[in-house]
Amino acid sequence: MSLEALLKDSKMPLILGHQNADPDAVCSMIAFARLYNRLNPDGTPQLAANDISRLSNQVLQVFETEMTISSAPEPGHDLVVLLDTNSRFQLGETLQHIPENPSKTIVIDHHERNPEIDLIADHQILHDDKSSTCEIMAKIYSDLGVQIDASTANLLLTGMIFDTRRFFYAGFETFSTAMKLIEVGADYEKCVRSLLIKPDRSERIARLKAATRIKVHLIDDWIVATSKINAFEASACRGLIELGADVAIVAGNPSKDVVRFSSRSTREFFQKTGISLGSDVMEPIGQLIEGEGGGHANAAGANGKKNLEKAIVHSVELIRRAVETKTTSDGSSK
Image (cartoon, rainbow, N blue to C red; front, side):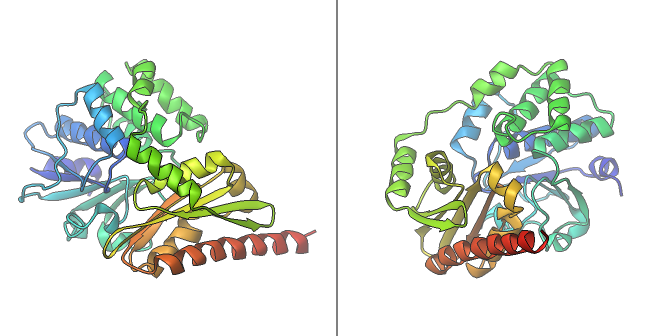
C-alpha cells in the first residue's frame, strides 16, 4: 500500500519522535501531521515524544505551531509513524512498546539503517544520503503533489539548518531543497534565529566537567577524547570537538539502569578513515550496554542499561582497530 493510501485510510495516526526530540524530529513530525490533514482533512493525528529538547521548545514558541506534542498519547491510533528514528529503543521507555504491528507502521528516517527495522515497520522511507528528516519530508510533499505552505516551509528549513549545522554538512540537493522552501515563503533569518540559544548554566557546567574529566587517546594521527558526565552528553561532545579532538565520546549514567553514549567526529576524520560512528562504533556499543546504538557517520549515540566503563574502553578499541585496518589496507595497496 502506498503512503498516500495509508494516510487516507487512517482515522487517527500516531506520529512519534525519538526521546529528547531535536528540531529535525519535532519539525518533521509537525510537517507530517499537516501533510496527513491535507490528504485526510477529517482525520485526527496525535504527536508524541518521550520528551523534547529545550531548543525544540524554543522553535515551537518562535513559530507558534498549532499542534502539541504529548508524552502520553491517548489510545485508539490505527497507524504508527516514526520520524527521525528507525529504532524502537530510541523512542524511550514510555513509548517503545507502541510500534507493535509492522503492517501498520511507517518509518521515515535519514540515519544509518537499523538491522532490526524490518521487525518494526513494513513501510519504510529511509534515505541515509539525506541531511535531515525534514529534507525527506520536503521530498515527500513534492512526490505527493502537495504544496508546502510558508509556515510548514519555515519548520522544514529550520530542521534542515539544525541537522546540517547551518549547511556545513550539505550537498547540492540539500541546498536546492532549501532554496525551494525559501521560494515558497520560508524566512531564512527567522529560522536561524529560532535556533540561537544560550546554553543554560547546567549545560555549561556539564561541558566544563567533561573537559576536566577528559582522557586523550592518540591513535595514529588522530586525537580521540573520552569523558564521563551524567547530562548533556551530546553538547559535551561538541565542546570537546571544538577544543581540538578529532573524535569525542562522552558517556553518562544519569540513573540506575540507564547508560547513555554520545559521539561526534570531524568531517576530516570520516573522509580520511571511512569510519562511521553510527555503524562501526555505536551499534556494537549499544549491544555491549544491553540497548541499541546507531546514528550518522559523524554523530551517533547509544542507550542501554550497564557496562559503562567497559563500553568506553571498547569504543576506543573499535576506533583503534578500524584505523589500523585502514592504515594496513592503504599500505598494502601501494
